[in-house]
Image (cartoon, rainbow, N blue to C red; front, side, top):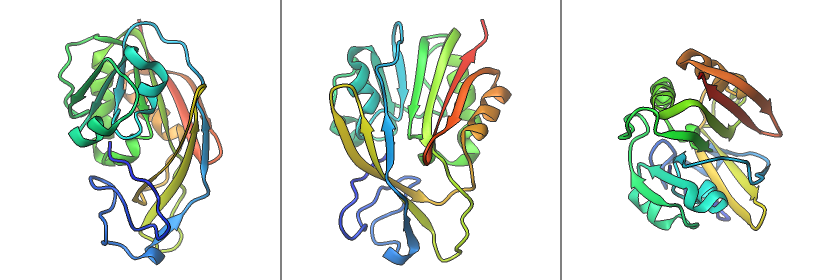
Length: 213
């Protein structure tokens, strides 16, 4: 999904479900503390479907030719580093793959850019294209309740540490309702997944779900 790099004035931002350049004043944006995400080379057999695999292409950088990266934005896919097997413009609400196609699906800091009312549909689509016993791995920010009505958006500086490189970037969105690992675990359960693990870290969360079978 859409990404952006934080600049000094914090005025260059993403489109889509993020906020458009010039639409917000600096005082309407809250700059969160930098998120630090250490991402090890997790084990995965077969192909990995990476939802929102454009932008920094974090999973593509980590897993290379195992990755099929999909994103709504062709530009984000074109700009993504790394060497995934495929880059495909595709809507996560309507995945164009047959049932039980992938043993692993990843969603790295992408649900924040998908409208909350579409989250259930995306979960159902992921469940459909996962093979029995397949895993869904999710990383996303933890959103607290917004206390100041004058603040409209939240900006997250982000450092992702991979085994062979470090990625410094930032994400920003209009401030959504509060959610954390428990939110995604509940959505997964509703879609038919088993919860393998969930945790809230320092400002971000990780959830691993498994399709029965």
